[in-house]
Every structure is written in structure tokens, then in C-alpha cells.
Image 1 (cartoon, rainbow, N blue to C red):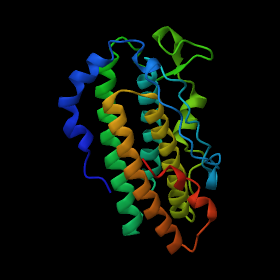
Image 2: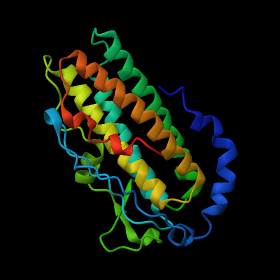
Image 3: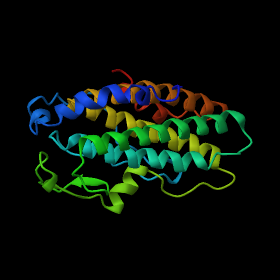
Image 4: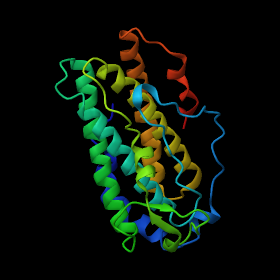
Length: 236
């Protein structure tokens, strides 16, 4: 599990140099890394959770903005899911939910600071790339649709009293898999050192929590093969 956000601790020292790097509008496009080669099956939607729409578009000078807005929505979904487990009466599950809530709320705050520092002219609402839009221009962006927000949050239908433990464990496993996909996408497309460090931290943290979620599901008697479908994305 993560300690409360090393990202936030390093934020002050990172903002200034990265903000300077953002001044070159074509830097991301010129230095785009190759896409990850891991063969990961499409996300399923266990127990009423909606599928994940993780793609925020191609590299470009607005990629980090699009990534931040997508990841903030993704993290918001994790907060909402975790809140169903507060005071559940199962200490392990409840403690994990509170850890996820604390860590991801802190990351949302950090990403909000990065957004303000790096993209002061961006709209206040979450953005997405217009189909065929210029990834190097704010003019190529539009307001993120509710369907896109729902896809990022992966909430779907809420749990019942009887199924909420498995609903949370399976749903959070799928949710963390979506975060791995987004983190690898950022490593392939972003040259921003803060975003790249953040993405690597997401991979390290999410793979540890996926293993813990699988352990808890095994306690519930569940050992489904699809619980391992994101293992190819565990490596940095």
C-alpha cells in the first residue's frame, strides 16, 4: 500500500521545471514513445460495473491535460465505490476501501494543482479530444461527455446489501486494471517527468492492491481466471 502520496511531497520541486517543459507545444509529439505491447483482453463489466473507456487520445501538447482529466474522473469512480464499504463491519475490506479513498483523493488534489500550473488557459470543465481534433491545441478539445465520464468512473449499478463485498472487490480489481492501462498509455505518450513518475507510481500501487483484492476474493471462494487478465501490465 502507498504511504500518503510521495507525489504530493515532491510536488513543489517538480512544478517549475515541468511547467517550463510545457512551453514547447510540440515536445510531446516529437518525443512520443511506442505504445505498450502487452496483450490485454478488453475490460469486462463484473457485477454491474460499467466498462472502462480509458483512451484519452494521441500524444501532443494537450495530452497531459487530457490524461489528468481522465484520471481524475477515474479516481472519482474509485472514491464512490470505496464509500459503499465504509463501516461495512469487515475490517480488512473496510480498511482497504479507506486506504484507496485516502490515496486517490490525495492524487486528485495533486492533479488539480498540476492542471492549474501547466494549463492555466484550459477550460475549468474536464476535456476530451474532439474526433479528428488537433492534439497540440486547446481548440481541439471539447467538454468531456457524460458517457465518457461514466466510462472513466466505471461505476454502473450500485451493490445490494448482500453482494456489496464481492461487488467492491471485483469492481475495484477491474477499476485498477483500467488505471494500469492509463498509466502505460501515459508512459508511452507523455514526456512530462511528473506525469511519468506518477504513472509509474500508479503501476506499483495498483498491482499491489490487485494482488490484495485477489487474496480477499479467494477468501470469498472466488478464483476466476479473469482476475489475472491485467498481470501483463504489472511490469514497468
